[in-house]
Length: 226
Ligand SMILES: NC(=O)c1ccc[n+]([C@@H]2O[C@H](COP(=O)([O-])OP(=O)(O)OC[C@H]3O[C@@H](n4cnc5c(N)ncnc54)[C@H](O)[C@@H]3O)[C@@H](O)[C@H]2O)c1
Image (cartoon, rainbow, N blue to C red):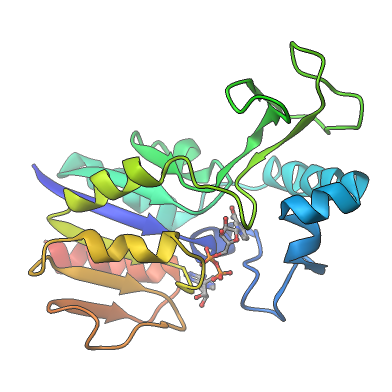
């Protein structure tokens, strides 16, 4: 089976009801991203950061995978599909996708502030005083701005294997995630699905831009691949 690598961003989950942040006003659900998604924000106001992710977690538990998530899962009938997502939601997994790598962490996991290896599944609210097995505070298992991206090397290795690359719903503004596309072989077909695509026509030798929201875009992709 041919190997498809899919890079997804916040736009992938927009039709499930989860807001992207660059679409609106540079704010993420009304917050300056540095206040809620950076180590500086955490040291400044831990309660605010925890409450922000508590809200995101509660919201995530109330939404469902959309048609685009489901179509990507169905592609596994005919292709080997690897998904590298910037999203912290679990909607790809809930749609059934088997190979999902989260570049920026996962909302339904928390980790110790003192040991990145102490990671726990977490579906409820997280509070000051919730601690790991060593007694240290837990924090969201999210890669914040300015932090290292532990899954980057693995994501690069996956991207290199692409025989077809699909990019869905990302503004390509967040690095190093946006740099993954540079690891494909030069002739690899690239499909870019986004209602407001931020990619220039000359970025790749073999680029197809599908200016659609994810559900319609992935449906068109499936037909083009047939
Ligand atoms: N669902 C989530 O997990 C979630 C949500 C918001 C932000 N984030 C985090 O914020 C960062 C944002 O970077 P990013 O590039 O992923 O997102 P972004 O907000 O910077 O860009 C979103 C992109 O999605 C496109 N889009 C909007 N509606 C769409 C739709 N229906 N279908 C397809 N595309 C659509 C927009 O045109 C835009 O290009 C990431 O690091 C991510 O971890 C995650």
